[in-house]
Length: 333
Ligand code: UDP
Image (cartoon, rainbow, N blue to C red; front, side, top):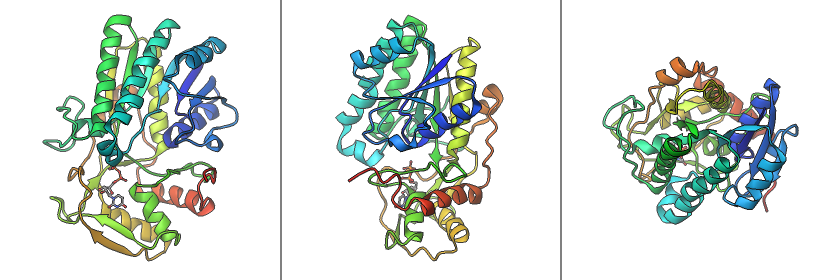
């Protein structure tokens, strides 16, 4: 059997492709537009196609040339909250409309399993912590809304066409492959840990912490961090779950532990041995106080066992990537 990984050149997609290849159980086909992804991040043992999943003639060619594909893992979405506030239609087009185009072609080729990257942003501002899968989903930005709409589209496609799905709602992701060969490279970078490490490297002058007046113990936002290897393993388990003929489900993926932005900074100072100059700035907008996942359901039903349960270990892997790749994949002008 083959697995089709959409967005396999992105941060989490490339780690998943790498895990699938090292498991050695099946062929891996990757589709990525390379708009945000990096060709160099894709394990060379995967079969690579450059193109857009909403381009139906292109996707028909991919399915036709790879008749063994029995499951799709879909990472190919835009994911920046702030950008989505300014350009909502870009998100509804690429993420939401793209999902419709994809499901149409999957249905044509009778591929009836999809594992999909959803997000904690579908919950909006949670009423209580930790967050459970059946808590209300009321997104507060177009990014979260676009992903919630994708979940709903999958639900109705399951009802009508029997396309089974697993929606994996990620919380925060941080870290890199422990050997330092693949890691996080966004342009522009907006995420906390890569920015902290770029300051440690001297590539940025200082870290701006967005707000210290939140309703949390130290006033900075609290987030739940998971390593991309652990996320990758959850996707692989989700494909197995669907292959066993089980019903469509949504699962949170988090560590069930929260770290404040100041705690991340402290841990990064300890790991890197660098001072990391920091300034407190105003709130960024759209940031809930705290986001912590209840991920008992993924552990129980999928048998998910995250390996990276220590924030220092996660930061060490990211530091190895950043210090050996100061310009990331170095493939942009
Ligand atoms: N953050 C920050 N300074 C930065 C980037 C992020 O203080 O330069 C904060 C951000 O406000 C949030 C946390 O770090 O509280 C995590 O943000 P990130 O963008 O990494 O992930 P998100 O939670 O938006 O998915």
